[in-house]
Image 1 (tube, one colour):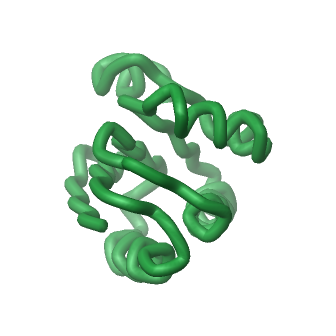
Image 2 (cartoon, rainbow, N blue to C red):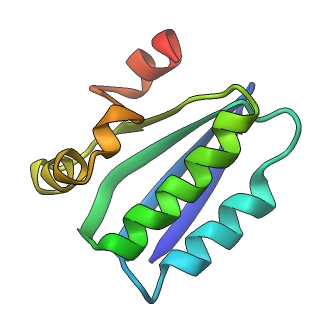
Length: 110
């Protein structure tokens, strides 16, 4: 999996590509932890490139959410495929992660 991070004001945009599973969840968590600074309040996951996600990937997202939530921040997702959105819905992640239709919408609302 590829993880590309870019900071825009107090938001960290994370573009993910590939499979998000047991083999890549730790890599994701480490990469995001390295990027979290005191200036980062919100995370935006761009999930357009995610081909597959399993419970390990969901757990890694939940772990990042807990860190951001402790800071009073939010986490959102854009470009989510219907398959991944369904997995988020079944797992309950949609209760804590908002889905947005575009980068501009998430910047306006988060």
